Image (cartoon, rainbow, N blue to C red):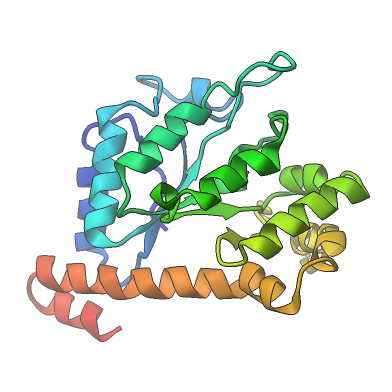
Length: 244
């Protein structure tokens, strides 16, 4: 995955292009990168990132052209939002996804964060998108212990999450999102945290969420990206990349 680019920079797409041309055969996607993320976004130097920024559209346009998988972290709402208020960023993020129907997108954490709680009727909000053909290119990531704490908070929330995932087994992905774990136990913490959820998923669904959907999305992307590199990288480097 290519990370470390500024999605509010009009040259971000050019940077991603240069990385692919400099290191062909290496990358399959971009991200996780951030637009609205709790208190993190304000710490990024330069212009504040926006879901309506033309620079972001250029990034997704290029990702679609190449076949790169894009993992986007964008909170559904602002921290400490008022009870009953509409999610601050939901309409904008949906509009972004609709503008890029050919981009393979994974929405990190289904829009939740450390202190950005699930919106009221969160599962229904996500299911509305899952039902809509306009979002058929969007998949949903349930990684991070901060997400797990919401999904398995009670037997009721766990059942709601499991029922939704069982209905759409091809659209969800799991990852640990553990940062620099020092032990295997630390690395697997969130995996084990999700035990109540795994127990409610069908055997087919749990295989897809843990591994199968990742393999399908990234295997498809890898073929597309290698083909793009073969067409856009010259000389022996391209030949070596195509052979990988």
